Structures are given as structure tokens and as C-alpha cells.
Length: 251
Ligand code: MN
Image (cartoon, rainbow, N blue to C red; front, top):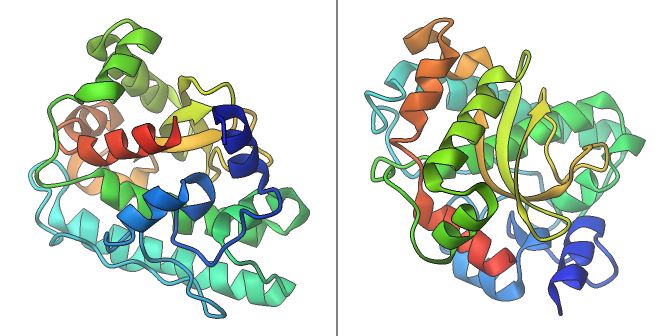
């Protein structure tokens, strides 16, 4: 499958792409899904004919300190994310929606109620976010991703500046993203509330490669109103191995 077909299938979920699901299945290749199925977070999600489940964290609540504090992690994961997960399942049940994977739901989310959009996005975006952070993270990407970032943005520091500024200036609650867009190019965007670039309502669609939560609940306890400081700290946590793997297997 060439890149254009892959993206078309990934984003539109044409026939044949619906399989019982690793979390990232609809926008990853079969090989990648297999490779990633060993990962606690990416490999989980919905099992056949059951509810979407909240993936376990790979690390302790205090493992990301001092950049993200333990209390924030405990509340964010244990209350906010758990709440989205529960409400997402309830919304699916209330609307009688049955889908094999979450990307299938996002591809026609405009036809469902706001409960599906908000809680489905909240469920999924956090699944990614926990994995994009690692106690062993930080530094700079290498290999093909590093080359692609340089090509798209001029340099890693220019990318860093753009991603930080985009996330930092997003008005109100939302997310900053690095995506592989529908032209197969890297792009930095932000989305409001719990929207994400897999949703049919997203003005710019693409495959998520990296995200950052800029809701106040993600940083307020430690950084109060200083979103910029939280974003600056995030660079010490980014799991570039995962971002690279997503890029290489999606591009
Ligand atoms: Mn959050």
C-alpha cells in the first residue's frame, strides 16, 4: 500500500481496516500493531465485545517528578482519565454504538452526541499522552524522525519553539499535537477540548505522533497559571523512541 492509500485507509477507515483492535490499529500497519502489542498502553483499549478499558500506567505516579508531580498524575490518571473512560463507555451504550475500534468512532464522530466526542477524545488522547511521557525521556529525536523534523521545520529547536508556542497559545482547554498530515508531512496543530486529529470534525486531520495536554488540570497544582513552564518541562519527558516508531511505521 502506498502512503496515500495508507493515509486514506487510516483516516477514512475504508473496508478492510476494521479489525479487533490494538489501540492504534487503524492508523498503524499490521506490523506496527503487532510490534506495539507488547506495550501495556498501546496494546490495550477495547477487547472484542467489551468496554474500552483504561490502560495501566507504565510508571509510578511520582516517576515523572520534578517535571510532573505525583499528585497531578494521581488525580489526572485516577480521576480525570478514569472519568472520561467511564463516561465514554456510558455514552456508547446510551447511543447504541458498537464499533470494533475507536478510530472507527472518531471517523464519524460528528454523527454522534457530544458525550461520545468529548469522552472518547478524553479517553484516547490521554492513552497516548501517558506514553509520550517517560521517566527516561527527553533529549532529542534521532534517525529518520530527526531528519524529517529538520526538513519540515528547519531544525529541532525551530520545531520545539513552534510546538511550544502552538500549545502555549492555544486558547482555553485543549491539546498540542505533532501529526503526520494527509499529505504525509509533519505538521504542528492544536485542538480544542478533547478533540483530536483523527476526528472527522478536525479542521486538520492526521496521524498523531506526539501530543501534550494543555488543560489546566494537567499542570495547575505544580505550575499554577504558568502553562509555559509546564510546556518547557515536558521536553524533559518526551519518549522519542515511541514518537520515532510511530513516525517510521506511519510515513
Ligand atoms: Mn487531561
